[in-house]
Image (cartoon, rainbow, N blue to C red; front, side, top):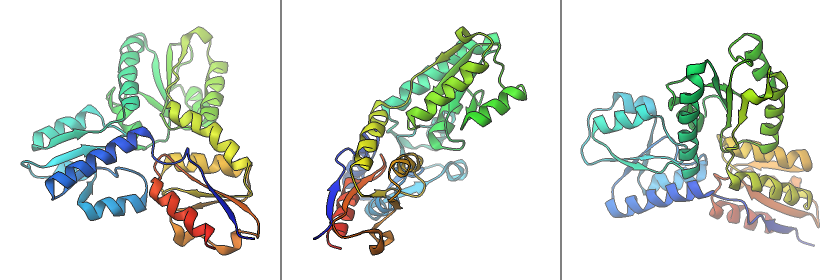
Length: 297
């Protein structure tokens, strides 16, 4: 009997990525030339290769700092967002800015600026639960000129408290990167609350994207209902690592791939029910391609 393969209909691009890629494709089709993207528009090598062939040119912030003035060129700000300084540099160089910052991220940026203006004069702190160096986190920290603490887990948080970088006898505003695990954020919130001299000094902001949060629950059910999980995402996708680890914690026969070239026949047994799923940065066309390949094994 052949393998039964199910494609997770909840996997694939989130709304912010769909908006950014759609904007890029429209501009590339109209200009018949090229479009600069500040950073990878999506953390997926296969999709970047497809867009690169259409004329998307990816540059980084270091490239931007040393570029000569341009005229008539467009620069796409991806869904992750950027700090105010980036916009100033791009305008000074003469770029037409195509701002595709995710609306959820924009709202988070506004909330962080507002919270900082309240607690900073009182000696309080803004704390962001996120991956150090992640593009979204860099944009969030940049909203307050770097005056925010980024923590990746409870041990790092406790280290900051122990060495005095984070005062728990002052007001603390806690935020999360929009793509983090809801359960990990809940654990961090509990950890910080246990260290506060007065729990009333801690304000927890629920800033994980609702689309990401509900995907965790749905993906858990998907992982449990299949014999094998083939998880598709780019190697640099933070969301992909979180979601793949979630699948593996529930189904030990979870395999992380970037493309069909990574698939091994020995992963599967006759009559296995295989689930194919992916991250918010995984294109639907790639998921469908993987599902079709596995079905033909």
